[in-house]
Image (cartoon, rainbow, N blue to C red; front, side):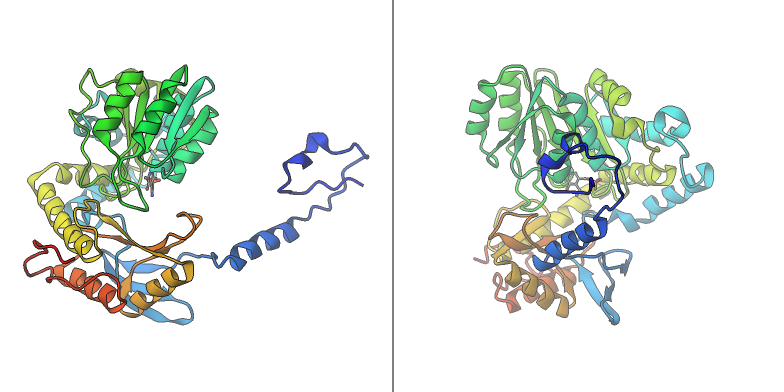
Length: 423
Ligand code: PMP
């Protein structure tokens, strides 16, 4: 009898199974699924989504077997709080009224609406590129760009802390891949220099679990010197870093990937770059071609948000966010930290989980991030801030952290706004 079932053993592929007659369907799927679930449970890593009834950072969090709990979230990527902005919401309503709920087909079939082209033109202008292409998610944007440019015959150099969608994009493209030590441009220079062929360097510009920034000036000049294509994932780059000199000629080839789901408060992703590079994506990227176009309402919301981001109001929102970041970063001993992702590294997984639940008991939702999302021994609280957090909410966060012995109480957010160093 031949029993073909799932296996972790790559040696048990169908083609290598002995030919012992017709297949009998005794697939051990249930046992495999139970075992796989148990492995996650035994590692203490079992998760499920908890619904959060909220518009903005304050709302009601679903609790296991208990009434909902009022909490303030420090876990969202809605960095400028535009998901609830009346102009953004009204733009989505107008798009719904004009074009209906779904786009009904992929962009190259009949899914394109005028609002898609309008958003792409606005994104291209924002990113100082010839063209931009909108995709259903940022994840799909990274899969697209890396599968098209990182095909057989290319070699990708990827920072070790890059986002999962970059890692999966590299797998999909089947180029050679070298993972370089986080932010180590000397090592990257040496590695790229001794690799022939079409080279790609890909990096987050703000790393999603540490909130630190890539050295963009260094990367641009390194890539240019080697003739390598530079792919930048700017998903979290609401407060910078900026690309030095934009994408003006003489800077080499650069593709700028981003998401519509964080600063732009909607859902979707994009890639901006030189015209022919983006046209190639439009004609070759399977996560663009074989999927339904983003909905008109999501697209219109992102366009309205982008207009705010580029206006004086957007500058005010960023300044307010930067003040919150400064205050919390000083409190946790990271003066000068610029991005709205602020890690508080605790180390032990159980300690990080218990710190997160202690904060929850105080009405503060700050998730614990554990291996395998972050390296062993670096379990942490991950705080994300938004310009719509009130000063009072940030005060509560700071004093909650202080009660747990994390950081030191500093001046209140409504006071001198952390102009002096607390540590
Ligand atoms: N890149 C980075 C750095 C991200 O953090 C994320 C989302 N967390 C993505 C890409 C994917 O973006 P999206 O959520 O739009 O799929």
